[in-house]
Image (tube, rainbow, N blue to C red; front, side, top):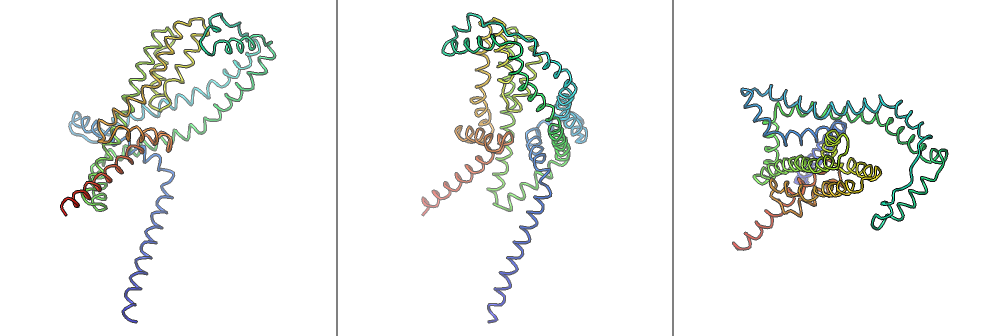
Length: 358
């Protein structure tokens, strides 16, 4: 009877301790939930740019504070300022856009050129549809276009509030990143110490691998965006599209946001065909196809240079993570697969080694 007493008390104590720890973890997660997105993004940014911070610190007489200030200013210029300009432009041009919508009543669509019907596969149907729309009266055309245009404008204006919320998240990201820059060594030592305590030397190795994978993904995204922008910008300049430098800058921003260059290049191709330049429209279409698809091949190769993973797993991590978690999944996917692959590889090799020894 007495022998069971200490065992029962020990089980009760362990159960209550685990329950209390679980409650603390859940409460901490609930409190930090509004900041989790900003924390994840700040962590990714700091890990990816940490070597740059150290180089900058060396050039600034070893002053960490100056380096952190410069890096924070760069993040603000790259993230906050463009978003503020975009919100201001949407709200400020609302009246002008509404006036242009009202002018659709006098808009006339010309008959389709002869070359439209000669486009392979879809030319005949496209010419028939174009001819039908061109034959509509001003009232009929306005009745069909205006509701959709007004709905689109109202949607854009209503998004100003959500864009402002995104702006706040990005501002939090920059602030948290600045804090992490200032104490990066302590945070790194804490993570490695936790991994070491959790899984020994293998856990520390996995934490280093995860950091390399995040840095590789960031490098792959930026370099891929530059390559896509160069291809798309070259196509815009060669085909003679007005405002090519501005459009090229927009392409770069879209590529960084993983929206791709097609959102800019497709309207430019349509405009060239509409204008009656099928040759240059086709040239830009070829550039658009290359710029829009090349990221599927370049990004996994660039990521593999930093993360020691099979190319198929890198590709699966990038694409699967993007589908599962959105943009942040580009980083989470390869990191999760890298950690899982490394643990399984070590476990299998250790099991094989034990069998050979036996």
